[in-house]
Image (cartoon, rainbow, N blue to C red; front, top):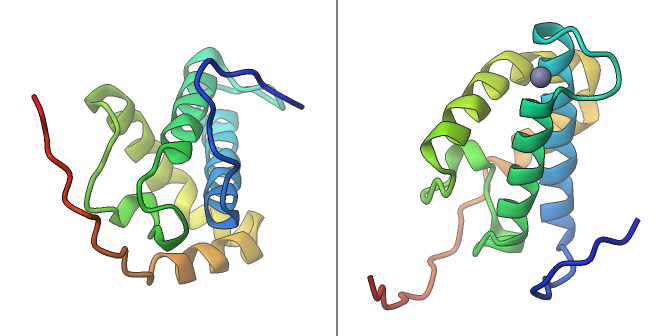
Length: 124
Ligand SMILES: [Zn+2]
C-alpha cells in the first residue's frame, strides 16, 4: 500500500517499522477489549494509531530509538499521550501472551540508549 504524503518522508528504518508494528498490535488489543471492536479499530483508536505512526516517521532518534515509553522527548500532544498511556498500560502485559516475540524484542529495544541529538536551535 502506498500512501502519498505532501512532504516526502524517508523510508522507515527497521527499528521504526518494528515500533509501528508493536504499536499496531497494542492498539488492537486495547480497542478490542475496551470498545468491543473485532478487526477494525474504532475511530479514536484508529486516529491514535495513525498519529503514533506519523510521529514515529518523524522521530529524530530513528535507529537508535528506545521505546516510546522511555523516550526523553515525548513528542505526543497531551490528549494523544493520555490515550496512548492507557493503551500501553493495558496492552503492554498482554503482549507477552499474544505476541511473545514482539514483546521480547520490545524489551530489548527499551534497553537502547538513545544517542545524543545534535542541539538544534529552537526558534520559537
Ligand atoms: Zn477503540
